[in-house]
Amino acid sequence: MKKNNSAKRGPQDTNQHNTQPDKIGWIRKFCGKGIFREIWKNRFVILKGDQLYISEKEVKDEKKIQEVVDLTDYERSEELRKAKSRSKKNHSKFTLLRCRTPGNTVPNLVFLAVSPEEKESWINALNGAITRSKNSILDEVRHTSTLLLLSLSYKQHFICHMANCKRISY
Image 1 (cartoon, rainbow, N blue to C red):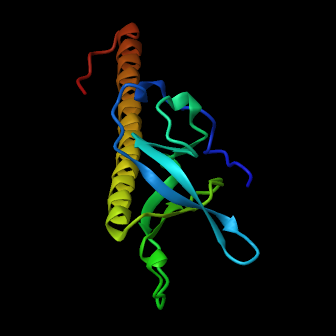
Image 2 (spheres, rainbow, N blue to C red; image 1 turned 180 degrees about the vertical axis):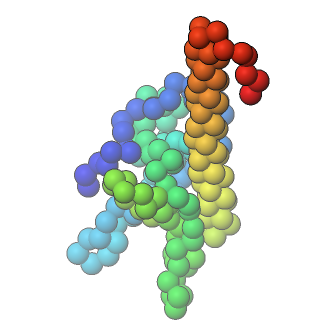
């Protein structure tokens, strides 16, 4: 399977090295369809901040992680169940749905948890991480726009001062 743009090798953010993971565990990842059945592979997954680290083996060092998924490219995580299926496997499936913004080429990811309770735990943890990542982006935009407004008001005050205008209170 071809790697996507958001699944880059190695850790993305150096600030996240010291923080504790939000969730760690083994889940199965959907890897495609074979001739007769779906292919599911066991993966060790670490959720830390707005990154989802996926590896074939349990690793302590983040530099050995095989796949890193940036959760800012995803909209939400939800249960994935076929309406009339009696299979226990279908009670533990969940998906990460990508954002529908133009240019977003990351795939939807499908996982299979050990139990329905573990599935709910992963869905809640992933949705919380996605919400936090979206809020941090909004905070950065607010901070940047505030700095821009401050610099504009300073320039206007400076220009007005150089032209011997009266001081205008904002």
